[in-house]
Image 1 (cartoon, rainbow, N blue to C red):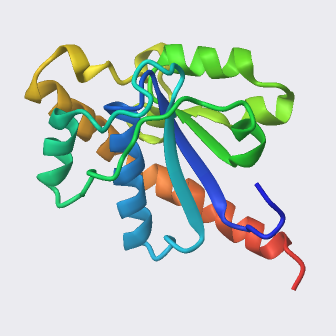
Image 2: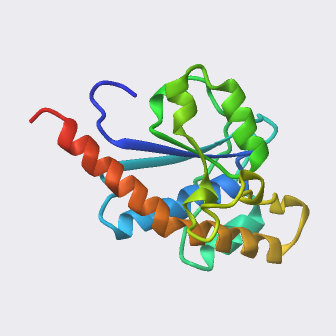
Image 3: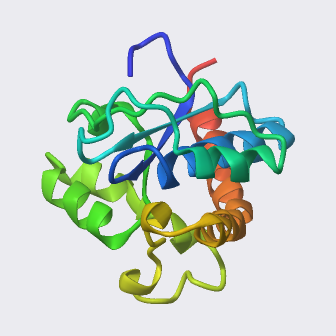
Length: 177
């Protein structure tokens, strides 16, 4: 993050950045906007692989987002970059393999502390093992699988927004006036 930016930065991470992580990104952006935090928080997404880099969001994910008036036509998949460990305040893994990959790649303890399972913010999942907090890849399935992903992300949004709101408030209080 450059010195002129004071926004709290969140990134959602999945495998190829065409299904789960862009859905989470756009749903979280909308939830933060409803809370009036859109100017204080930046949200983006990436994949741990470059398999899908440069491609648009999966049409089934786009269809599910469009059902709640979330536009996704500008999304372009991209691969995780190591600098983002230092440039992001919160790193949200969508499944346990993403969590493991990010944890192994983390360059230091500070970076490691930023990595969380997205569903750990869902009160019904918070106390569960990380293995149970994953969101399975819907790419191999049909529309019902994308609906399931939407519902799993949606259930985590209130807790995630509370966490981010508290972090933004704390960051605001710590900055010199």
